[in-house]
Amino acid sequence: MTTGRPTPDPGRPAAGVGLPPGATAETPIFVISVAAELAGLHAQTLRSYDRLGLVSPGRSPGGGRRYSARDIALLREVQRLSQEEGVNLAGIKRIIELEQLVDELRTRLAEMADELLAAHTAAEHAAASVHASYRRDLVPVDRRQALVVWRPGPRRS
Image 1: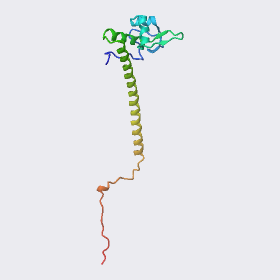
Image 2 (image 1 turned 135 degrees about the vertical axis):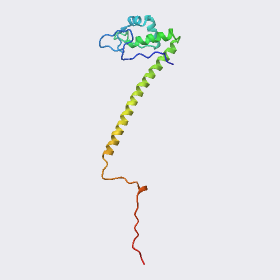
Image 3 (image 1 turned 180 degrees about the horizontal axis):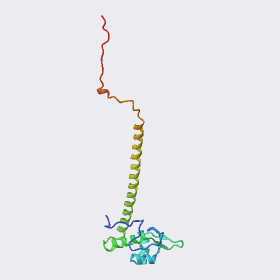
Image 4 (image 1 turned 60 degrees about the vertical axis):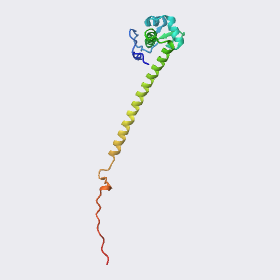
């Protein structure tokens, strides 16, 4: 089951979320009150989602929750699935898990495709190297089409 929306790109901030210089979409920088405001939710809802494992924010050295731009995009997606699609929180958790699995599998597939391309390239170079080492003065002969000249030996009387 797809959500109809792409999952947030970890390299880009969520729409409408400004990041300080040097921060990425994965950098946990927003305190819970700011994250709640950016996501359009109540802070207690964010705590509940954290307890349920829907969104797992980073933690500050003092233990406070710190949300990244990606977390905020995920919070918005949870809210959208719940409100617009009518999916319950257990279903949303499963959707999130499956989308993460799909992302991991896509990444692994891309890695394997790169490995396969490298192996094909190495095999082509090895074959070219072997062909380059052939002696040019030898010519392969197909024995099925070879001409055999028969000469009779001396006759005995």
